[in-house]
View 1 (cartoon, rainbow over the protein chains, first blue to last red):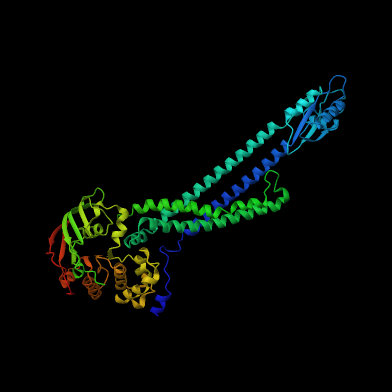
View 2 (cartoon, rainbow over the protein chains, first blue to last red):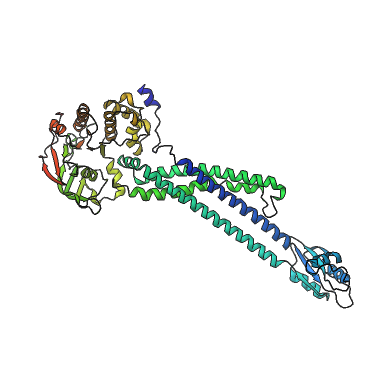
Length: 298
Length: 244
């Protein structure tokens, strides 16, 4: 019987496999991973929304036309539209009807339809060529060249604000992500410390059996990296499911226009187990090395 | 298996030498004071003394679990006080240690416990599988290879601890109260194992309270009294043969 055992023997793990604290640690790290993944997906979606809005605004310009003396607002708008349609980089020009112009000022002035003599400026909507859009200066030059009194608004104020908001969202996302990674590292460091203290005797025996500090630190590093990778899988999986449900609930445009989640965004969760394992490995290694060094005198 | 330097005709260096060594824990008074002695390779000694006399501390200095506050310690001719801690593991692999409380890994089988130092040394399982089985048979645990330590009796645990301590064929074997948790019959059986190992060339140093064991063995004694070495029997050529 002993011969059979000897022949079939496979080395046991150096550290005890299960620990009552392991379940709690996996839960905490998995939760942190879930939050990190949701943050990444949210940032991607918000970034997409910001880029979409910016592109929409960049692809259009609005021209406010003021009729000159003896000229009707409609004819002034028509003249401006004709002039702008000939500018290189302009795809389409539409002079907005009087009713639309009045509707635009209604929030401030109320119903002005009865005030026929009120000089409500006419608007001309310009769709720009997305490949080589005309600049606001080019539009302005063309209008001035025809003696048309008009103001060109290329929405640059808004696009800058949206770009700034997009950048801010990215940085906030990155900050939250870094914070979560640091929290995960701290949790693993704490768990490593507790694990080492609980296994003080094992560390001592390994030392006496000839193991060096690096060997023992590596055991703890691998243990916690493996555990974090499993937790990362759970967290990433949970985040992918939640984001997938949001995507399904929102249809093609995402849940809301503010958060247009794409299926490809779910790929952001893929590195999570690896990153979690890496953070845990570094935290466990540094903690274990420091503690083991202090365990030489027993 | 003989590694007796005399038998091999090698130049004799002390296996261990203490030169005016003192040791203290933190700011506490000195636990060991001005110890000077040496052990020849292949010798067999006991360390005796009352509780708190410093026996365990002396062993700790030898197996490099503590550093002296003063003096020089030479292990296998190497000054360990000048050796960086990173090199301790290499020295520790040449020393086997047996404790009164066994210090076995409870999650590992008896076989795994004995194989531990070999695995740490990086040996492939196939290269030591048979050696471990033979060693377990030698200490009388052939039928208990798969057993986990908590299921073993005190004497079995101690024999297992001895097997683990000697599996690497250490040049020095240290034992701290190895018979403290076993009955007299088992004490004699364990002593016989130590004698046998010594016969194969291992330098043996046993710290014990067990005066009966010391008397039965007839081996030289280092006696500690409040951290001072108060009696050293003459250190001559390595002793041979079991005398219990």
